[in-house]
Length: 295
Image 1: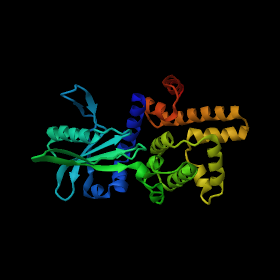
Image 2: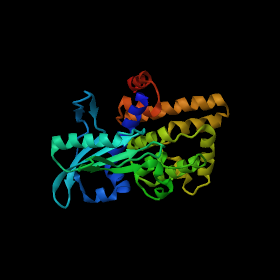
Image 3: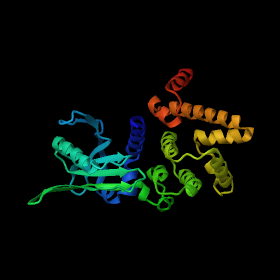
Image 4: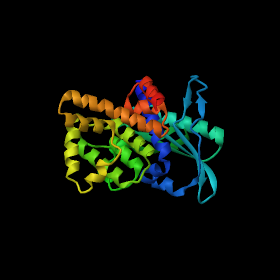
């Protein structure tokens, strides 16, 4: 469970850090409107210690920037949450208190819920029958409550990646992947960022061999099929295509392995870390280190 959460945590952190402006633009336009993005300073390496329980905690995404209208420094804290925790709203207040105690700046707290359950809380209260002490509010994005169709006409890389975590049915999986590919074909993004988006998307929406074959057949019928097929496709798609050509199950498995190696080599050339490549491709660290030695 801890390993799964760490993987989720790292993927969301990489995605939102890389596309911080785009993420706010598509999901929190009111926040995006007030921020001067030329003044961004990441503060996410800050580690806080719980003085009561003694645990240490590295907040996922903390950024210092400027409020355009007032030319004043503010803090934006984004906390992805992959599982329901009934004390999460209290924890958000705890993080807020730690940040404010250290920086003494206005803070915009945001929680991103990526679990399937309906539980959602955006407020923490402290009160007594005779006295209301405080009400702490924070912004929320519950991805499963978002309709993926509302975002497919945008050319926003954060929205493209997060389609994989939005509300869709099992029957819509192929269609969601197809719309994702259309979005990627429209956007002009450098290969390293494309790999990040693909790695994120396929962590949460990975089609099986039969679904990939159906997808490829549908793509071939599209007007912009050539552009889509020229994308730096994922190792899964590469494997399926190679396997289909070979026409046997063994060929599909071999093709997938070859596709993973191709993706790993490209990511190494683009400067991605070994840790991140292992998360995206699921290759062993030793295999990736061997590939790097051969380059």
